[in-house]
Image 1 (cartoon, rainbow, N blue to C red):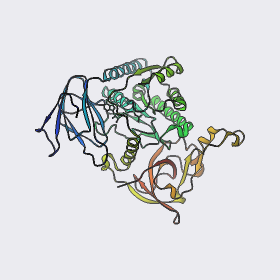
Image 2 (spheres, protein in one colour; image 1 turned 180 degrees about the horizontal axis):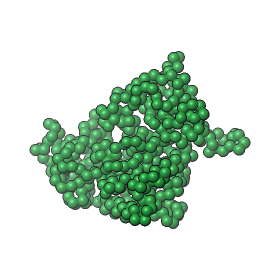
Image 3 (cartoon, helix red, strand yellow; image 1 turned 135 degrees about the horizontal axis):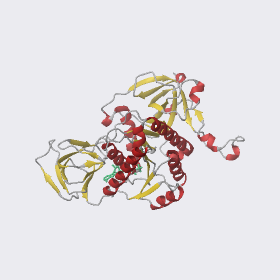
Image 4 (cartoon, rainbow, N blue to C red; image 1 turned 180 degrees about the vertical axis):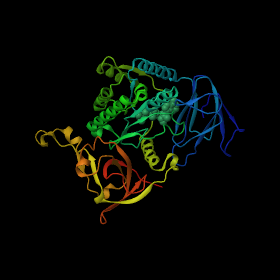
Length: 441
Ligand SMILES: Nc1ncnc2c1ncn2[C@@H]1O[C@H](COP(=O)(O)OP(=O)(O)OP(=O)(O)O)[C@@H](O)[C@H]1O
């Protein structure tokens, strides 16, 4: 293990058999460590012994043990210097003096100035979009800026547009969450009453028209909230985006900037994207190029898939799979209406007169229940029940929850579902996702 300033001790072992390694960190340095992935991997505990330190913007309490599960990639940063203990065997652990944290703190300070100005002038606070390719630390920068803002008494909103790796809800959704306290060091932000929309797949490219439509829906709801809630308005929002920054992905970023009327765009580690956005966004939008942290870890396809699975498991079973007890029951086909959003694209020449591809992307296509529904995640739409009600505005309606189809009996015309709440379903309009989940519990 490559460690700097590390010293192995045996006195502080909290669990018999778990070795401990002490790290003495100088000011403005960070300890980065990774926990081995895989179900058999051992968790790693972290404890702050002296001084002060934070994990992605959330302060650590002294002499409290924080546990990190398989696959975690963590940075413990200190502004003044500190010493910490790691218990267990991290896959990697090293201290780095080279971090962009001062630049990130300055960014927070600049946003805070904008909030103060907004308070004085009775205006709205900063709306910030964080962009960049995959694995540059966008979600981490969002978490940091939100936690810093809430620590100085603000109530910012997190807008999550990353349909592949959502920090708020299950994959295949876009959402908004009002942040009222810093992220929990182990669990992240407390997710209470988020506003969630169904997208249905893990890449915006599968239906870019729908993606842009949902971005506009979130922007409208956020603006309405700002009109009636002064704290939310001054707090502003931090928008996390997907790592797709070319072609339609780039156009989706420009669309988002205009829908939310963003004031600041933080571009992480991508000079071309920075220049393109500077060229294409109105001159009053401040586009800022920031370096990525050397600690950000690239994640493989498998790792991303595991994280997605974990997020769905967490929705049904709670953090580390122990908090909630989901229900399993049968639903009659005749009691629900299942739709997919977006009809398969057909050549322009085959479209009916006066219809464009755009219309097909937002079309509701009824799904006949069959065996191929098994393992699919379904969103329960909050749209009013009833044929007309369900069809009208269903795309723009938020979802009230998710179920997973665990078995389909075509003879009996029923399907078995995994649900966070007991029967009956709160609504009967279901939207199918491309995403599947196999419940191994
Ligand atoms: N300074 C750091 N030291 C160690 N690990 C870090 C650091 N910053 C971020 N990470 C880890 O790197 C991983 C990737 O970071 P993050 O999710 O923020 O990237 P991203 O750009 O949002 O990714 P995506 O491609 O999914 O959009 C995460 O597991 C995060 O915990």
